[in-house]
Length: 370
Image (cartoon, rainbow, N blue to C red):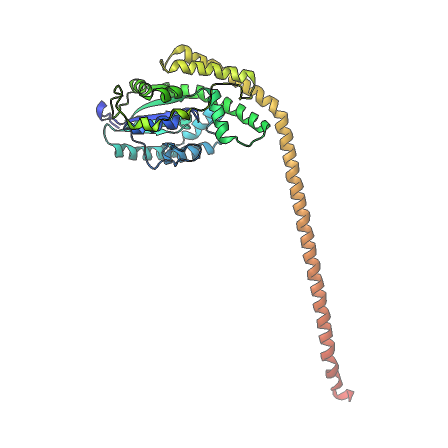
């Protein structure tokens, strides 16, 4: 496709970040600042009563793609990124996204601005980047940052209520591991494009200042002068009480090394807010990811025996169920066969009796028997 004039090109900003990091809040803010969120949107629910501001098509598209692996939104496996990229490279996947995004470009028209939010997007950055280039779209990223301890606590509040301590410990560790893995993968995925990192706390405390800096870093524009203090619909939308979780590790039950990696990764991401391409921060995230990969390998090794035993126990349980089902089916067949045999015997007896009754009179009428 031939390149358009800079002011005629459609701008696409993708809002991403770990779940429970304020991605919905920033997407709702972008919408109120004049950017177009493709319709229909995912409906609000109890976990997010103010709305997700996620295009339903995008969410379903990404879910199908990740489920084909399968992979989770907050996947902690270091190999997940490569597996997802391979799945996203399929021609039919690219064609599907190209068709949908072309329709959105036509809807907003030249110079329009699209805002797409889905925490899963960073997994398929190359796909979105390639399609954006094909359609001559200016693509940039806005990544929401929230302290990992708060993210884990928020996920626990909404998803881990009424669970056992063992289950909560397992999920907290997995969620924290997923945050560390995603912090690195998001930095790598967004590096080739204009990008902004926004702290959730900053967005709640001073949304104008946070969004002014994001616009300067990504090139997007708004429908209002944010240097003015005039009332704006975003003032009614953002609620500072949304940030209920405190920054404390006291309620996070996990191993110290993973916590150390999360803290170092958070500190590096914090630097990227003011300097999105800071080499030191990027190097720290890469180093933490290398350490995380080793830690994940150790965790897999430790869990291997437990996994093997669990698989063996499950196999035995399945075999026992199959054996019991087979025995039950065999007993039922035998019972049915015995019933049939009794029915046949009864019918034979009735036939024999009926045959004897018919034969006797016939014989008495024979001529030579008279």
